[in-house]
Length: 236
Image 1 (tube, helix red, strand yellow):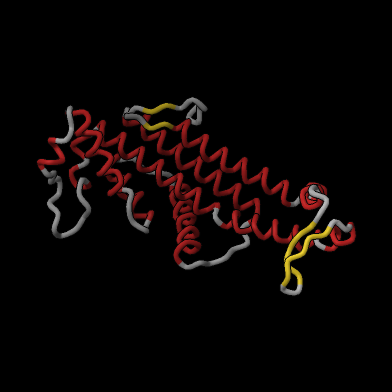
Image 2: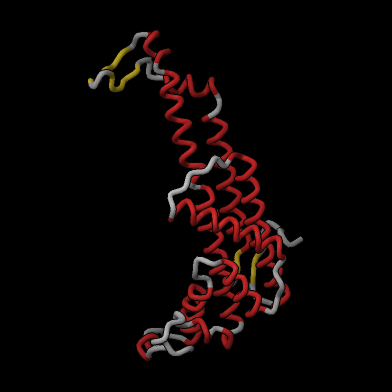
């Protein structure tokens, strides 16, 4: 089990790249005109009735509504970017913690079970033990469970506090603050249905913040000798 920096770097990079490509198309007037008129006809609902026309004037008349609809669709996609970035980052944190717990199995006891009154810390059912063929399989399964519990919760401040307590590593305050802000934005979008005009500068900023976050996790791996891979050399 190792922390794959390259995987998450690629996921963030491709997501940001696809966003930029889509934005370039949606705000390219010539490209939108070619797209809207490529079939040489326009169809839609007018006065409550379906219509289809090949008239050039009709095509021109419907160009703006069609392009407006495309841009509105892009705005909807852009609003989901913090949600997607946060989801990828959450997975990266879980994977990092899993690798850490496999390396330092004695640290996972507090997180094997969710922190409820009915659970005993470190308690594992005999059935969960017997279903694994090897000790390594059992260790990785328990590490994954503990990692998900340690990374859970709406408050990312608490998650970072757990990571720092486990690893005895001080994560840069700026990195923590920006990730907390990203998750706050994500929660407002998902749970409160809030709408924001984000823009390219903001999307680039959260991309950079996510890269900085996984880089910090990579530095912990280096310091604590947790297995990792870094094919894109973020830690160089």
